[in-house]
Image (cartoon, rainbow, N blue to C red; front, top):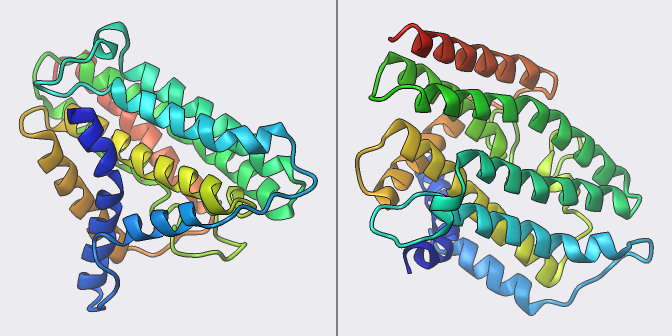
Length: 272
């Protein structure tokens, strides 16, 4: 039941981030429940599928959603009886999400769209830099029996990786469709109707998965939903404080995250 509530509340986290950003910018904006209205509207619409699309394009929304839901089931939650927690680990979550990313990149290439191919290329480029940060940061945190200075450094690196992985500013911008800046949005431009709704729901769940990993690794004490909302507020504050960077500047951003994660692992090895 706890996992079901977390899945159902995943769009609410995105709504909270959007609401906090609008309040900080002194804008009225939509309410926190707007993502639910958007999903309902998309589920009610018909789909338009390109004549060049293959079966990969058709099954990708289901694969992406299934991978995100299954990854969420591997996230430890206090008080929830879940057999998946005992047969997997945090690394399994990254591999499951990578499966969804692989199919989404293929779907972006499948229709022959220039934007889709561009988005797929950018997504794989960013993920090749993000995944090492997540792996090394998790190793650094797990290597420490208690909360140490290395956990703080690993947490900062993990925050930078989560910002990139959830398509947040300064690496990506979910609120734009400009071809020079979009990464994730470029891969889903050809989708519409129910398929687009499934992909949007999967993106909300993926965001909750990474927020949960960050909450469990960096803040091991506390109620998970409360920690997720705190992280959402922090992400919103970051987004209104910095500007979208150029794509190739993202290499410097994620390279700094890699250096931090390696430093956290070294600091943990020396016992700090």
